[in-house]
Length: 364
Image (cartoon, rainbow, N blue to C red; front, side, top):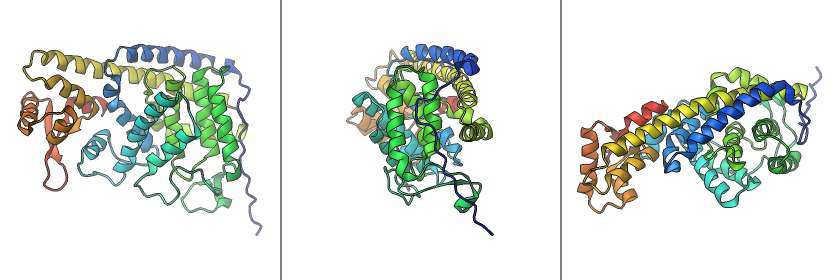
């Protein structure tokens, strides 16, 4: 029996020639939806605090595509020092941390770089079951098969040989900075290209999905890199994978871009609703407590939007409260007002953890 020959896929170098007419309607709808979301994002005060729940939601759903089970609440409990509810909770928590690191890196360097991609990989896979080298492109050939452990001869897809990775990624980064492509289209092309090149041994899907909002943020389409595109992909996981694979086999990007732009349009609208709900809740609570005698209560409200599960010692640390009793009184007041609810303990027999339930309900 002869062995099946292995054919490595080599995607075209960017840019590629596109027929914009094929996805013109989807592009117009996506541009309109992103414009509305951008307008809403610009009205946010303390924006980085308020996007915390949406970053966690994107982390939850993007990771679910890879088979994880943890929820946004699980991630916040774990981040606050509580017990991991699932073995994959650290994986989802890492995604959230990686997004924040990327935001700060782009703000500092004003650029999408190879180093940024490697840092994302290192952060995503740190402390989880991963045997490869963190933050390094793969040094061997890999393949995607129907079942884990299938030999390369049974592969559904074989990315380019590892010796080509650097040239592909350098080309991708150069393409991101080119000015003659619409940014929404560029984000879709980059996502496909990154998935096709498969530069890392593991984590490519999550990094590829992270790059979508990061590119839109970097190129000025969004004030914050939040568009929650993974929600659409997760709900249509088979279509998502099929659209990517069809581009592999046909070399035509337009059908994938129709799907991608529909995802951006739909999820921009959904994200807009979530942003408005989060902003309205923040305003409602600020108004409720604006006449409080406590000098800390309004700052605590902002902190809860950033960290919706928290302990009294963490409140003391983050707000610079000198007295434990002061922190406990704040928690007791918010418990009495049904803003905070006890949800467990930090470690074994440790301090209590409290959750901002109404905010967690918005993103659940």
